[in-house]
Amino acid sequence: MVEQLTGEFDPGQHQSLLEVLEHAVANYGDKPAYTCFSRTINYRQVDELSDCFARFLQNNTTLEPGDRIALQLPNLLQFPIALYGALKAGLIVVNTNPLYTSREMRYQFKDAGVKGIVILASFCDKLGEIVSDTEIKETIVTQLGDLQSPVQRLLINLGAKYLKKLVPAYSIPGAVDFMTALRQGEDSSEALARAEGKGDDPVLILYTGGTTGYAKGVMLSHNNLLTNMMQFRVRCLEIISDGIENIAAPLPLYHSYAFLLHCVSMPFAGNHNHLIPNPRDLGSVIKILKKGRISGFVGINTLYLALLQREEIRSIDFSTMRFCGAGGMPLTRSVADEWEQLVGCPVFEGYGLTECSPIVSVNSPSYNKPGTVGIPVVNTEVKVVDEAGNELPLGETGELWIRGPQVMQGYWQLEQETREVLTEDGWFKSGDFVQQDSEGYLKIVDRKKDMILVSGFNVIPGEIEDYVNTHPDVLESAAIGVPDEHSGEIVVLYAVRKKNAALTEQDLKAFCREGLTAYKLPRQIHFTDDLPKSNIGKVLRRELREQHTQSVSS
Image (cartoon, rainbow, N blue to C red; front, side):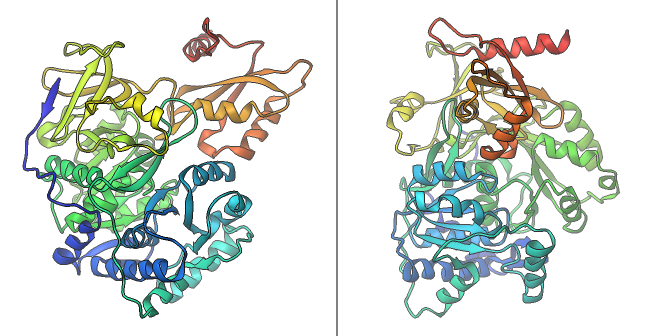
């Protein structure tokens, strides 16, 4: 077991996530906090606008402290305003993937008991299909250009609705416009009654796949996120300074790492976050890299690879770039080398899980070893164990167990699943297989069993199979991940037709598009007479992967 306890660190220094914003206002109030499109707001404005939203929530809705509110937003100025406003009103925030289908939204909102939601108008048609099946009573709808200047707001919103056709028709009775909510909060004569939680109170629920079944809600407390912020600072202060950095934000804020970085760590440091609503629009990413004098950039392997294939990236002045990070999926050596040669600074890899708030280990200039994900951050213990939980010698491959103040409170309303991954003495069983060398550096050997990683998104085979198996012509199915140079992996589905069924690959792909988010869609579908299974009837996905590899190479 290797324990890292280096650096200055006081785990009890802060009690509430709102202290992050208070610290930013007190020390960096007039410094730029977030830029999106053509508008920049400073930390004082974030505080004032989130006050308005909090007063609206308290005085104009039925929401009460402890209720769950979902944020289904891309990277827009509205995100931090809604986030900190919800926290000031004492609500628990549930981050939601904007790419979810209505079926996936229904599951998550019902599971978390969501009672309110802030949602982009572009996604309201899906919400309208399922809102009556949920506990949601308060819907606040924002448009793409909200919080921009009046002229820019009008142009962006009209363009999104009528030119780009990004806002399908929808009907959600009682929905309130986000800008109206801010005005009502601003005009309210009622004082803001601060009702935030603190310490080990849950503040955020993030959904993650785990290893099997549907996504689970990871409960993170104020302490979890605040200590992970400080752990990250101890490791990275040598390259990320306070009050001067311009950090690009292409990763979605609903993702655990981007949330910690751009909604917690960088605000505490008083740094400037350049929000990128759609990282798949490489033109917008390149535009920010050109004009923003960016000093920090964090992405995943697929984003780095895609940018390197754009010729205009080579005309950018990267002289201000001091820090590049990668996580979410393995960074290939060729991509890392080419990016470093182009930009002039290395890409530091790290490792984390939503259940760990998420940061477990990080490389940095003083701790960098290419090909690894660094050493554990301060106050974090790790050990590598065999199937029986016995600790293995350094250098051997086994499952990574983690213990530290960033480990989650548990899975939302899933006591049994929580007990399966958290030991009585606080060890979290990651399900990831690693090696650790004599210096403490971790190398990821394999991910959670059977999990498929598509462009940094965890895809749960069981969820795909559960949906596919509802097709009237499908007897059973199994999904596996297959390596792909662009997205890391793609989903390949093996399906068994029911007797005499004439189901085609095109038919089944069309069915999948109706109920699965784009990154979960099977790119290949193969029909087979049966699936390989163990003696107890469990589908052996490893054998399927081996069969697929053999069929491709033959």
